[in-house]
Length: 423
Image (cartoon, rainbow, N blue to C red; front, side):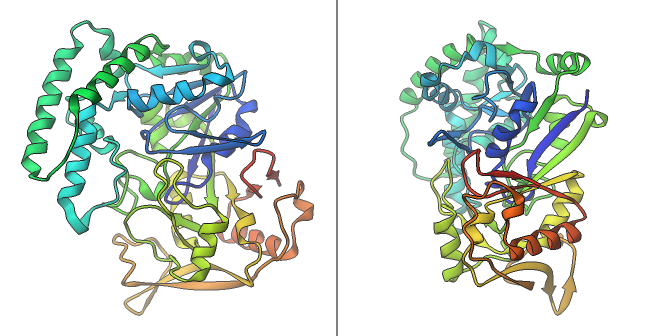
């Protein structure tokens, strides 16, 4: 049985959590394959809003199993708090949630090290969420990280002490002033480790091998977005993991020839949180209006997202990187009421027209070339069928499908799970 894959095609915050929640009833297993608790997948249904950070977005559906794969880094404190916040929903986590023994742990000093590193950069900081994710991935590739399976070994704290000492030495080398209470952080950390130890820790790749043989349907869920990929994103303003389709193979142990459909999610406009280049960013009233209507504030950090018009150059790049077979357009309702809507079709760099995503993205040296479309006044949020779409929205969608050579199968017209229209 093939595996379907769902990921973001911009700088994250595209609405992946909502679509996973909408699609979950057609899958047996939802498997998160990369990232850490900087991800904030927001789900809305029954007039309630839920923000998930580490737990896959299928957790509210009674029939699906949710797996945290080996490519994820887990902060036990944030993770256990997330579980405790979901207790009122009577979710049987021993049945519904599985955690790969090969996933790496974020320990308290990872977070302190993250803050020290970012503080030392001054104006050159990359906009880290300061959750220790980058340092945890550095220890993973440096071959001295701590994995979930390690906590089952009675002597695992010796490994913890060695890693902590390494971190404290590094923190001193940054020579920045930081205030932290490590004893308090550790007390909470070890309390959460005891809870984590009693959850369903598994050999996840073996579980997924057997699930595929049994014909179970699997949806791999990504975090962040393709433009934040460690290799193909706007480096160095990227995350520390592989956010593209290749990350599902390494982050779950899925063979490439087992991936069938790749669902690519994008907003009808573009947003970015934190630092880094953004060629179509708007600094005017239109940009601030997008942010206010779209509630563009980070679900994890609360930071205001930068807003701009849809960037077709970047979107084509990400579709090609991931082998996207179907597109989902989110937040189309946010563009209602604008007289004109624009799409960036190319860049102008040094008086040259560029149609591809260049090696070095410098917003100060790039001028976005736009194609303009008439806007639509209609409120989309109460629409339930694509036949109700205004003509100008259909023109916008049809143009995108033609240029991207990929069908747009879902259009979201609001944050609630019910505000999802299949085309």
